[in-house]
Amino acid sequence: MALAVFRAARRAPSIARSSSSLCNRFLRFSAVRYAADVTRDPMTGELTSLPDIEPARLKFIKNTDPRPPPPSSSLVFGQVFTDHMLTIPWSANSGWDAPKIQPYGPLQLDPSCTVFHYAQTLFEGMKAYRDKNGKVTMFRPDMNMKRMNVSAQRLALPTFNGDALLELIKELIRVDKHWIPQEPGYSLYIRPTLIGTQRAIGVGPPNEALLFVICSPVGPYYPQGFKPIALYGTTEYIRAAPGGTGGYKLGANYAPGVVPQKIAAKKGYAQNLWLHGPEHYLTEVGTMNLFVVFKKDNGYIELVTAPLDGMILPGVTRDSVLALAREHISGKSKLTDLPDNLVVSERPVTMGEVKAAADKGQLVELFGTGTAAIISPVDRIGYLGGDVHIPTDPDGMGPVSRVLWKELVGRQLGTIPSEWSVTVCES
Ligand SMILES: Cc1ncc(COP(=O)(O)O)c(C=O)c1O
Image (cartoon, rainbow, N blue to C red; front, side):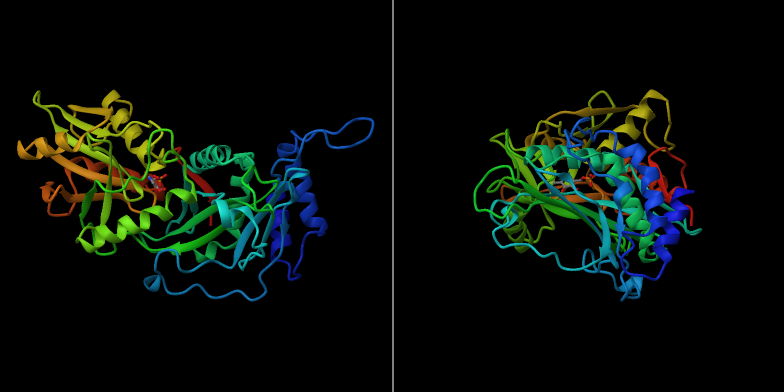
C-alpha cells in the first residue's frame, strides 16, 4: 500500500516531490523499519547516534527531459545510462542524509575532494533482469550490499544498512524499469559507488562521502554464442598481494590493471591470468574469479578455485558456482549432467599443476566467473613463452561449466525457481 502511494507521487508531474504529502506518508511508513538506530537525547532532543540510510526520507526529482532507450542491438557495455540516479550524501557530523532519486547527470565536486587524490572509491556491480512477462528480478543482491560494506570498512568510508540501500536501489530500478531490455541475455547493469568527498588534501578518513547508484542497459557478453578466450599468464605484474586490497572491490585495484591488459592484448590474449609468487599460483582472470576442472588419478572430477586468502575478490558468481556444485554433491539439489563423482576444492593451484594436467590429458576445463559474463571459458594460456591448451567442446564450453551456466542463468532469469532471485516488481 505504502509503495503504491509512493508510486503515485512519482507519477505526478511536478519536479520536486520532497514535500509531497503522499511521499511523506510512504516515507513515514518505512521509517519505522529503518530509523531504529537513530537515538536522541531525551532531554535535549539532540542526536546521540547518527542516522543510517533511511528509505523513508527518499526525495524524488523527476527527470523532465527523459530520453527513449536506444535499440538493444546498439548497446555497448557501460556506455548508456538511464534517466535517473540515486544519491545519498554522508557526513561525519550528521550521518547519512536524505536519499535522492534525481535526473542522471554530472556530480558537482570540489577538485580537492579526497576521491580525486587518494582513490577513496569503491563500487559494486549487479544486474536486474526482466522476463517476458515484465517481471523484474535481481540475483543475490544482499551479497553485493555486504561486500560493499566490507569494502567501505577497508577504506574508512562510512558503512550503512545494506537492506535500506537495496530498498532504494529497487525503487531506482522501478523508476527506470522501461530501460531494461527484454531480449534474452540483456539486463540492466547497476553500479553502486561510494566516494570520499572531503574537501581537503590530506590522507585520512574523509569527513564527507557520497554514495551514488547509476544504471546502464547492457547486452549479452557473448552475443554470438560462447567464444572461449585466451589468457596471458602474467609474471611481470600482480593484481593483488597478501595483506593488500585484492579481496575488496576498490577502484584502486582496477586502474593499475589497464597497462598489463594492454600488454596482454598486444600479445594476442584477451585477459591477464594473474599469477602469484614464485610458484605462480593462479588467482583471478582479468576481473573474474577463476575455476579449474581436473580429472584426478582416482577418476574423480575436481572443481577447484583459489581460496579467499585476501587476494581473491569474493565473487557472487564464484560463491554461487561453489554452492551449486556442493548442493549437487550433497544430493540437496542434483544437477542433471553434472558428474556424480565431483569434488569441490578451495585450494591454491599452481601453473605447474595446470601444465602437468594438460600434458597428461587430465585438464578438463578452465573458466572465469563474474556478473558480466557469468561464465567465461578459456581455451589457451600463454605461459613463459609457450601456450598451455585447454579443451573446450564445440559449443565453446566444458562439461562442468555448461551445466553450471544453465543453472545460473535459469535462476537469474527466474525460469528455475530459486531463493537467490529477488523480485523488484511484478510487471
Ligand atoms: C577482480 C574481480 N574478481 C571477480 C569478480 C566477479 O565477482 P562477481 O561474481 O561478484 O561479479 C569481479 C567482478 O565484480 C572482479 O572485479
